[in-house]
Length: 226
Image 1 (cartoon, one colour):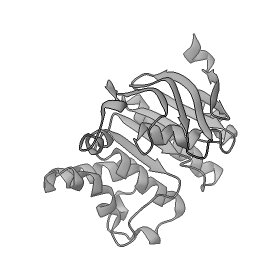
Image 2: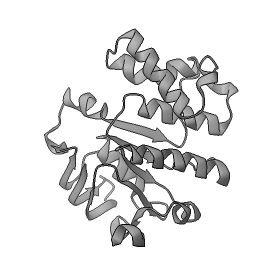
Image 3: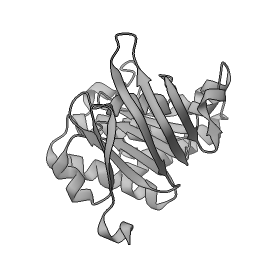
């Protein structure tokens, strides 16, 4: 599903955000990427979503080599990737329903199909009763759930999440991560950047560890490693 082959990213400032990073994630896996602030976690996710391009190396997403994706192919590739952010990035002048529907509207999905999928996604995250609410009337945890519903509404094969629990309390963080784990059980690949070591230990999933842009560990729980 996702493969990095000797991927490096150097910015014009001379900063090496990633250096010779290689790993492979199978379909349906839930994997965390962690490391200190500035280790390269966000850069790695940006490369997957084509918000950035690598300086060297090859990135493959769902059998597509990203270096070959240009112009109009970028939106098409992104439709296969659900993106979740720490700050939610919700449209405050739109209802919860309209926020979740946005990816389907952009893709030109028929109205009835859109409504069906939006309500299924909201039901999945426990917010079906709030579909008409304005985002600013929701709690921080509920807003994050709206962001997750928006990411999964188009049923993408890959979800990437950048510090999705950074603003949540420990209990809400666990609930959100359990949601991601459920998606993995249904075949969706999930890659989450997080610095919350307690949460990573609690989830007991594979963890990629970055240090100054280098992949220094690829930890797999005992059950997965065997």
